[in-house]
Image 1 (cartoon, rainbow, N blue to C red):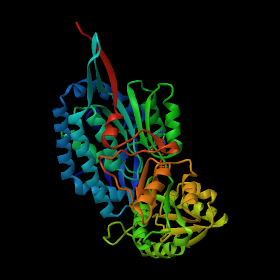
Image 2 (tube, rainbow, N blue to C red):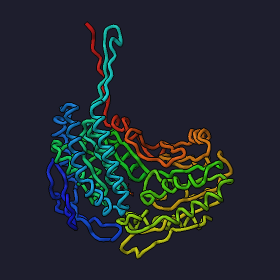
Image 3 (cartoon, rainbow, N blue to C red):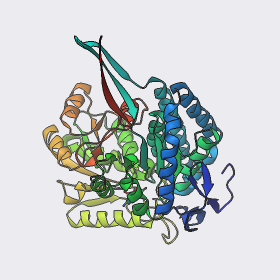
Image 4 (cartoon, protein in one colour):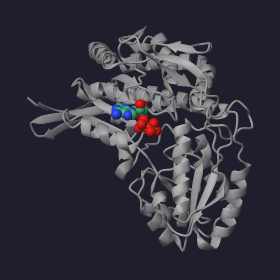
Length: 484
Ligand code: ADP
């Protein structure tokens, strides 16, 4: 896929070879901004997943047996190959997701930073040693790769999610069977090409796009050779995977939904804060689990904040993702638009006011554009307990910091949260009281390879990224050695 010739035709990557599906079936991938079919993709069946697991099991001893330096070098060669493909992958991301080209370029550049970080971590996998822990013995702990990892990724960041999971698992010395989202398999396949070219042993990375996620997922859950399933996606599917992993007592890492609250206190410089909240809500057309969903603004700052926020939101340009001036492209599909329209209608029925946006901008028979919008309400509504996966912000006026914190914490999720205050100390004190895996104080959250990321409560289990993200793919073995 170094040049794009539409519709692109792709195969599965199994056992180091590119092959058709065992059933011969394919499925179509459409560009959400045009509705055009951009690819025909080999559709993996359960038998292909079985073959991928077999190949991973066969290849694992060689991969585990390599020195850290040798693994690092292969990962570095793959990164060089990804750099050569950066432009093509950015274009694939635009075609698959509809996100603006600048955001797609940012995503692949960021993914490269993460792959590079993980390749460096491969050089410094930890170990511990206790000389004479008891009078008659020494002890040491080695951290061994868990083995085969099943990775299931979502469509909203088709490169970055692959970098977080595949980069960390390979660095840990694991093999990966990757099942990308059916909406966005092309990016994952293009990334995998660079790993094949880099000399990754055959079978250490397989890629199985499929129109039957449950069928392929079942193989990953049921095969005893698969030690760990790492998943990013909806809470509902995460729950299903967790239940499915019970029989095999399998390690499950889940990065699930969020419903990020934003606390805005009364001492803020509204103009500064608005830009950050707009970024936190509307990046990726609001289709991000860290996206700022619910804003709780102090009564004394509310009028100024709502005015400035509305103006900023109305300035966002919705349109063609290939245009440099576009801020927001289409949503992933019509279903996503319909879900948001339903959430808006139910919010309005509960007393919310739709201040701006929230309407389709084009004939949605072929595209999925929705104007960025704002809902305001006097108090918390039931619907604000739901994740709005798109460009709709809700704002609730809070009496004081205490009420804002209480409302912020009144959620079954706990992935990300934001706090804005003119006084950094006050901001930090509020952040301390918020139950969330990640909090941005006076800033929109950005991803950094060094920083662990993950959720509490129904937002997930485990941590991704950073050293913590590699450790999740290792397990410790404690060895005691008698002294003579
Ligand atoms: P969304 O609703 O945002 O598409 P999903 O949780 O449905 O989020 O999808 C995230 C990922 O989970 C995708 O790769 C999808 O194919 C996969 N998936 C969906 N259902 C299942 C399932 N039953 N088993 C395994 N993977 C699944």
